Image (tube, rainbow over all chains, first blue to last red; front, top):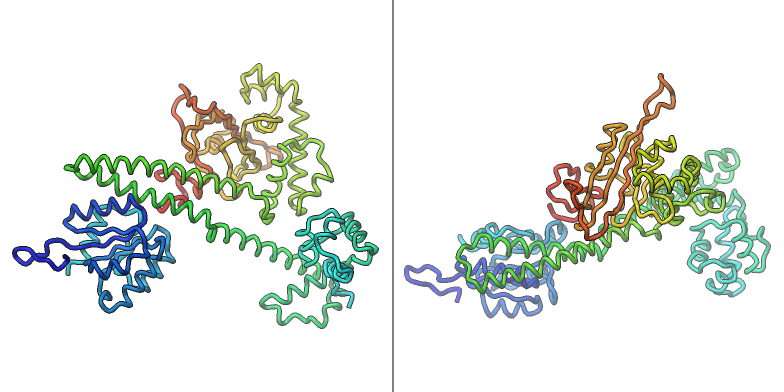
Amino acid sequence: MAGETGPGGRRLARHAMLIEDEPHIAEAIRFLLTRDGWQVTALADGGAAERALRTARPDLLILDVMLPGRSGLEILSAVRADPDMAELPVMMLTAKGQGRDREAAERAGADLFMAKPFSNAEFVAAARSLVET
Amino acid sequence: MALNELTGTRVRERRLALGLRQADVARAAGISASYLNLIEHNRRRITGEALDRLAQALGVETGALEAGAAGVLAGALREAAREPGGEGAELDRLEEFIGRYPGWAGLTAGLQQRVGQLERAVAALNDRIAHDPHLGAALHEVLSAVSSVRSTAGILAETEDIEPEWRARFHANLYQDSERLARGAEALVAYLEGAEQDTTIRTGTPEEEVDLWMAARGWDLQGLGGEALAELGSEAARELAQDQIRLAEADARALPEGPFRSALADLQGDPVQVAARFGAGVVAVMRRMATLPEAPEGVVVCDGAGALTFRKPAAGFRPPRFGAACALWPLFTALARPFQPIEAVVELAERTGEWFRVRAFCETGHPGGFSGVEVRQAAMILTPLQAGRGPGAAGPVLRIGPTCRICPEATCPARRERSILGGT
């Protein structure tokens, strides 16, 4: 669906995949991005993430660092190791003050960090900046 | 070589030679197995009656277990030589060193022991803060709830044309998150209070040790002597405790319990009027009020630099053990205005819905007369107001914290350092 184009050749909907175990945060992000014209797929568990990623082929991956099942860092490493997804933009959600997590995610190849709690406008702008070239 | 044999090593060797288990020997000697283990590894010293009982349990004379003073000294000095930088120490001339310079040897051994204590204290504190899973989990929980609240509230405030179903859903989310936040905050406060009360790590300052020691006695220090003092681990702590005993006894002599209680009843507990009736100091009256048996009041006393010299907690009010207290305490208002009674109703920043009536007073003394310095002392007494009844018509409520580090008040204009409770 991500590749669909509308009249004038513009993409109809950019597709974001969100992997976040906090249901209320996931709901808020889904609302914000949908309003901004995104199509959003949300997963609450890290375990199923990779298979879902290969099937859905999103334009952007939003990944929480702390996840049940499989940690955000492990998923990020797997994504970067897969030649098909090596270029996928990844936004990591970290908690403020988790300096060590952030360093590790930087090494693993995250494109952008968003510290919780974040401002909604900043979040939407960051998501856009990762897919607009 | 007898010089190297420490008491613990001798105890261990004797026990193993008899084929006895630590637990059995410990029971026979009336000490705990873990304590015996520390003794056997020369990490605790054992003397006097306990050593006699241990000797009996092992079927030997006490003298056979006692390490000579020189043995203890030599052990500590060998330990010191193992520290980085100790390579140059002439271990082969250790006996000569102890023999010729017993004072220097004793000092080096004492410093070595102190370094060990401090290293353990630092490790314990570091561990507690950086790697404590409970603290980490509690903070993560609060942070998650705050993130959700911020986003959800932002959506509700900024989206004008939000569909009613979404609005209802976000309102429900907000409500749930607020409950989660309240629970998280409670868990954090409980954790921090628990950490304050934790007495298992006896590594703190002498002041801390004396505070715990006084709390264990319900702040009733009159007539305490050698036996109670022996519970304290350091000479510095014993000296401090002795000062506190003298102070409590002087307070009790100046303000005998019976007449003092009737004066409190007659004068509605006004410390200034009670002090006038007895010709006593207001600081002494406040300290006495809060340390009467079963008194619900808390009290803190500080010196001219604002350092707390006496603290008795009240329900919900826990003065910090180290570092400076909250700058908004009426105590410090009083400190700057000697002999002026300062009164306020306060709410503790971390516990909404609990109020205290607070009275503070500062006195100055001139122990050196006209040519001497001024010595300033202030006290603040906190009387809990009935829970749930509110501050009533007592005027504006002042919100105070314990100390910045564990205070959640984000917008406090008097904040001095960041709080570990938030990411701001």
